[in-house]
Image 1: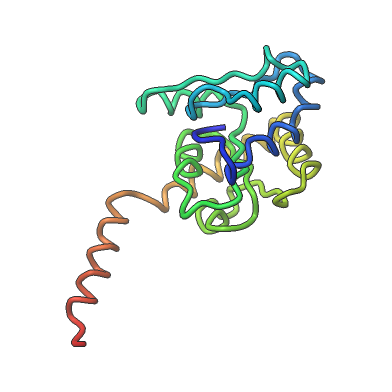
Image 2 (image 1 turned 180 degrees about the horizontal axis):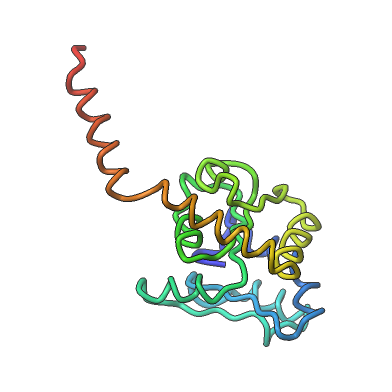
Length: 174
């Protein structure tokens, strides 16, 4: 999990979805990169599942984020809404398979490189995470798909497209 954990980012939904997977495998960890320290509510929830030792929060410097993605078995982005979803591209670029809700801008960004779950369905999310953790061939397939999908996006391309839109509007006579 990367970044802010509040409200529409769905951290509590995510945690409750995968808590049983963490309980089944003491070598599995939920790492929250960024977003500052856990809130009192988050700590109480984590403690209520007796998973304090398997849920980790670390703030990071921008240069360190790629290390989190490359060492992760998967990246889950349970957010209910994003304008674009930069973490989706970041994770794919680092060879980290992504599990995300099938809504908002996510299908456009992730394409067929995303493993999609039904928003609000904890069992579906848990099943998708379990499948990527238990099937290394599937995991590697999604790593490759993600690396290919990420090639479709670049800051250079974005800049050119923005300039073209601006030039188009400047050329119009109102």
